[in-house]
Image (cartoon, rainbow, N blue to C red; front, top):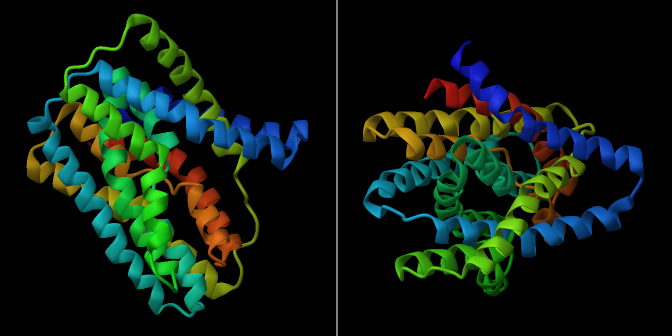
Length: 301
């Protein structure tokens, strides 16, 4: 069996949960209130528990993790720079500012699910480090492009971000050698188990495949999808080979670079008066295409 087939089969249950979420939203007619509540539960409770428990259970070799962090940083920086090329296309400035974030922002839910599927708790811990470090610059770049006034709101948002807080707490506990009581670890483990399933169902429920607009908008969407799903992982793969990275750290760095855009990009665009409809389309198209491209990139590694 080819390598890409092996990886695709390993990730198939995760991607099936995304498709199931999309089907359940349409079949059960639970409404936006239910799915919005589910997404908040995952974002504020379940995924922070997953991040923290993964980090406290795993002893982190920071010297070995440093090249992984360098690859992830380089890949995201390339997405930010290449994403600026969409400004040259004939779309409105606000539409560009809204869609720009789709060139480099990433879906943490899918990333942690993939890491857990491939490597279990050590994979979740490695992806948690990357996610925790990459969320602040990704949010800063996205808000900066959309913002017309000061960034005070941005810093408040970062300070309250549950994924960042859980990562910082987990890293601090890890460095201090803190071992939570068995009962607490069991409790966090139960929450972590629910996080993957419900998080992927929420991703699927958020898919919005509608028309992207005119020819110029299609061109911009195609360009940004190519940056996120092709250019970023290609840069990561080159850096992995340059650093001589292998094993879990190489796979986690490459998986991070190949992730589709997070659904929070749509929320940010809507909140700041941007082109939410275009961003929603890009997120949905990128998620569906990412189900195909992510296993291919991992197989190339």
